Image (cartoon, rainbow, N blue to C red; front, side, top):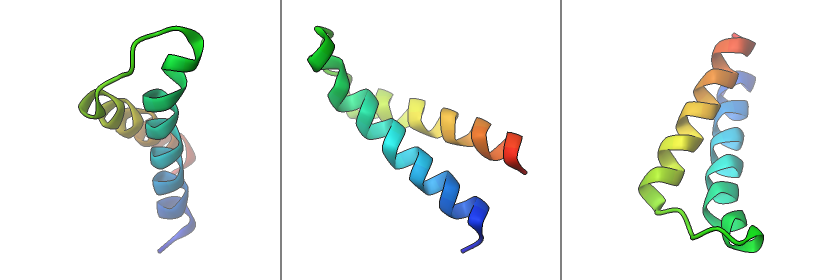
Length: 52
């Protein structure tokens, strides 16, 4: 794996888990997995495009 791929995967995992589990800590309802994964993918893709 190249460093860009590693960065993409790490960003995807961190953002997805953060969206899924941080919401209830700040008083928001828990985000469904589908929405968290989609948002994580979008953020990781934007980071990958900027870094490429």
